[in-house]
Length: 482
Image (cartoon, rainbow, N blue to C red; front, side):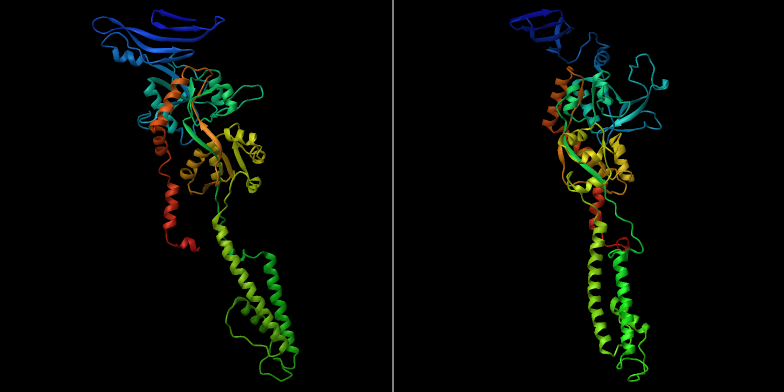
C-alpha cells in the first residue's frame, strides 16, 4: 500500500507491507519563504527512512538574512586522536593566543560538555590547541560542502579504544557508542570488531601494515682492526708464532750447520730473538733485516710458517672487508615471518587494527609484541628512536611518515614487504543520519582526486629522503675513513 501525505512543511510518501508495517518513508522538508511578491515553499532537506539530509534554511528578513543563515547551520561535536600526519597539534600563536591558520581543537580535562553556559578555557574545563593534518583538511572540506559547523575535541585518553571484558569501550569508541560525539575523524581503522559497535563511512584512505625499526650501526673502536678474528684465533696465531720461533732457534742452535759458536764456527749466532724477528716479519709481510737460518730443519720450518702466514693474511683481509661491509650495512628485515624479529623488542598499540590482524592470522609475532604494548603510536615511534624499543608494528602510512620526517638522524627503516589491508574511515554512532551524506562526499573526493592531492601535500618534503640522495652523491670524506 502506498500513502501520499502532505503535512505542514512536509510532503512525501509512506509505503506499508502486507502486514501493515511501514517499510519505506520518503519526505521532502520545505520552508515557507517570501520571494518579494508572495510566500512560496522552498525545499530545505529530505527524510528517507532514518536518514535526514538537510540543505539549508533561508530565514525571512533582509537585514539579518546572512546572519540567520549562518546561525541556522547544524553544529556537530567531532572527536579526534592525534597521530602524524593525519592529526597534529600545536599551541596557539604566542602573540595572538589563537589559531591563525589551523583548526581550533579542545583538549579536555573532563568529559565533553556543551559550553553554552558561558564557561570556557578560563574555567579549566579545556585548553585550546591548534589541529592540522590530512584528516583535518578533509573535515574542513566536508563542513564547507555539506554546510555544517563543528566543535573539534581531542579524546581524553588519546586512544582509539579497545573493548573490555564487560563489553564497554574506551577512547574514541566510547564517545561514539554513548553518543558524546556525532562522529570521529582520525587515522581510524575500520575493523570487524569496531563495526559491530559503530558505523563507518566509506574509506577515505587505503593502506596496509608494516614494521619500523632503527638501523643503528656499532660505534667504531680503536681496536676494531682486531674484530675480524675472534680472541681464540688471535691467541692461536700468537702461540703458533712463538712455538715456531722457539723451535727454529733450538734447531739452528743445535745443528752442526747452523749459526752457532760450534760446528762450523759462524761469525753470527741465531738466537731466540732472531727467530721471533723472522716469524713476525713473515707474518706481517714486512721486509726487515734478519738472520737467515743455515740448518735444513730450521729452513724447512721457516717455509712451513711462511706458507701458513699466507693463509692467515688472506683470511684476515677477506674477513676485514666483510666485517666493514656488514658493520655499516645494518639489519634488513624482510617480512613479519622473519625469525629474527622473535629475538628483539617489538611493540604494538593494544587494540589496534594491526594487533587484531596478527591475532586473527595466528602470527607468532603477536606473542612477542604483546609483551611490549604502547599507549600511543607516536609514543611507540619515539621509543624506537630513543632505543627503548627495537621495532614497532603499525599502519604503513604513519610509520612511513615517521621514517621520512621524524627521525633526527634518519636512522629509521621499514621492513621490505607491507602486509595486510587497512582502511581509514570516519566513525559514527549506529544508524547515524550523517553516514549517507558523508560517504557520498568522500566518494566524490576520491573521484575528483581531492584525496590524492591531500596525500601529496602531507607526505611531501621528506628531509630524510633528500639526505639519503645527497649522501649517495657525496665524495668519500674523512668520516668515512675514520
